[in-house]
Image 1 (cartoon, rainbow, N blue to C red):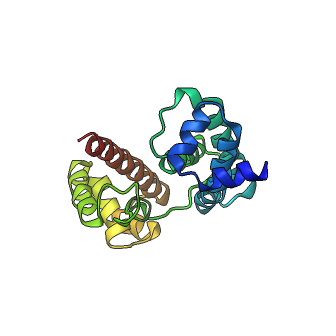
Image 2: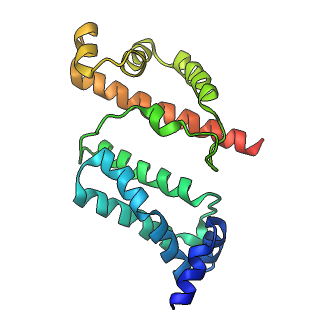
Image 3: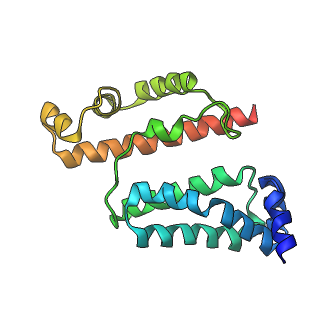
Length: 192
């Protein structure tokens, strides 16, 4: 069994995904070992609850295993991170947790050396400018103040005469909208 683990340890992600899809539990176990900590950390910085994070990460892996035959996964890490972020968003949406606000650019800008990076930072900033022009005026203004002028939600709410909750909701909405815009862009670029 140890020899089998060492063999899987040397496999690349594509080999592991192909083997897992065919029903290989040991390949799934290697994916789990490889990415559990990364997914845990990704979730924890948003939720700050050990119990919620452990449950969320476990549910992502359970879903991966139970639906492995139906999924067409090209990049397992990108798939898992997206699944975790989606589950965090669902928790926010259900009101089961309050978001830990972070700058969305930190999550979306990858160095060109990363395997799953299709865009560099300059290109992403240009696409964000396009996205920003498509947003309602108030949402765009709040986004600029928060992420470009680095103002706090309190400062924004005072300057615009809005409640902090409204500002936070607009930031969450803009973050989700920007993420969706960039994801669609990435899909289009990967097809080209």
